[in-house]
Image 1 (cartoon, rainbow, N blue to C red):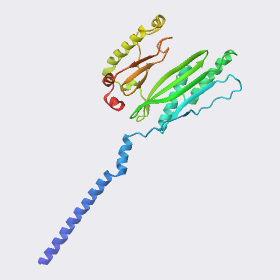
Image 2: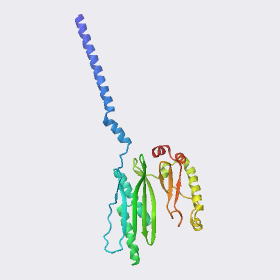
Image 3: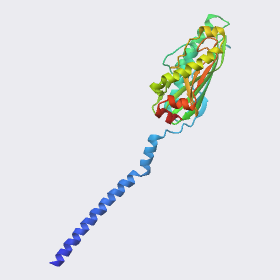
Image 4: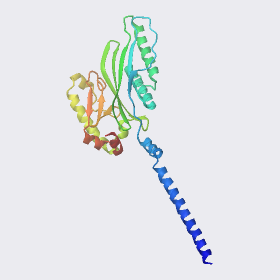
Length: 275
């Protein structure tokens, strides 16, 4: 009888130990799975955007065949990155800048914008035999980047209809995570718009005082800043107005916000990711 009890007890203990081992094994496997390199990489991949690997190059564009000496002169230096979406965004931004030189605002590809520019040049040349073809030179620079935010600067030199333009700059900001262009109004705290407007208007009035009498007569009393080009660096944000954009013959205007002002103006998450 005692032998049977001992045997039964040993079987029971064995079953318990076996169950403990199985439970321990499952727990160890789950823990290993949680801490496996693949799981860690997945988490990091979701949080960290790929390195851009920026390469300067000439834009791949098609120009019309020209047999005359007075041919359109177009040169576009661009950058290529490891981010396919950003490359497309760069080309669309370049298209907007080219359109701006001829007064267009349409949703065009870079090639379509170039075709429109060539067409405008051809029409100008057709008006008078001595009219020269347009000239445009563009360069592209990733001026600054922080986390998902990328600041791009586009510069153009043009010769159109007897008018020479040198170093006309444009700024564009992209959010790589959301894959969209960032408007400054999207990042500003609604309750801080009045505070920002005061800073802008004070800077504008100071600029206005330094302008000629003719510019003062034609310039608006207040400056609208909602659609202005904007930029950012490690210090803060800024607004950019090109020459003639506010009034004919008016000087370029840049308005800078220091770090404290920037922190007060921007939404918390935007400021943390941008600075």
